Length: 249
Image (cartoon, rainbow, N blue to C red; front, side, top):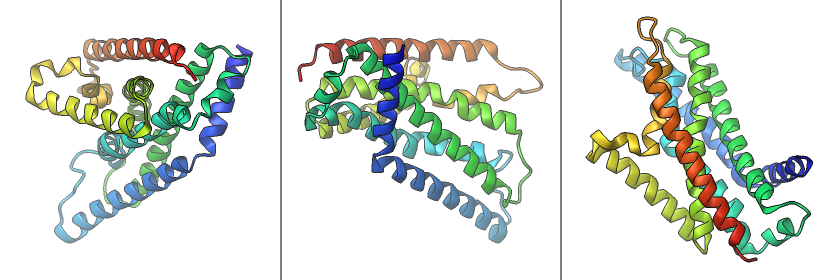
């Protein structure tokens, strides 16, 4: 356990040193600010509320989940695996007295930590921005739960990217393959809506089921989507580790 903790801290430190982290934070802040400005201008000059009955943080969430946040998840995960193998810096990590399973797990935990931190940053910024918008405030508890549960589908996506990063030979191919598959899954959801549940990307909006409608939560739907996501996480983690364990330096 101590080795895993040390490896995790090491991965967080390497993540902290990457410029991509700061770029992600800056672009997240800029995106929230632009969204708030657009909503304010539409309301001020056209008299139309761009938010409708939705509070601003919930309006921002799906937009950034499907664009900026997912894009930086690809950047970070590809860099942690394909990037380190391409630069041959992975050998310094693999020569430490830590098993490959713990090294792999620590990298996954670091990626999940990035996802959580990025979502919490967006949530806080959007809540602050909503104070300056002419709309009634939403439930902070629902906003927090919506952002928190969004970590799960993003974790499944991150593990898919990690699997691809261990299968491909370079960062460019890993990045392009991950983006293409994400867009393909999204496209297949639209073409075959009856089978959309089998694609983990369809769970990106499962936070909507945590909003009580008439005091009722659809626990059955929430549980089914939870099982789908955890199933993908288990499969992607297992395959990703199996390939990572067999890769040569």
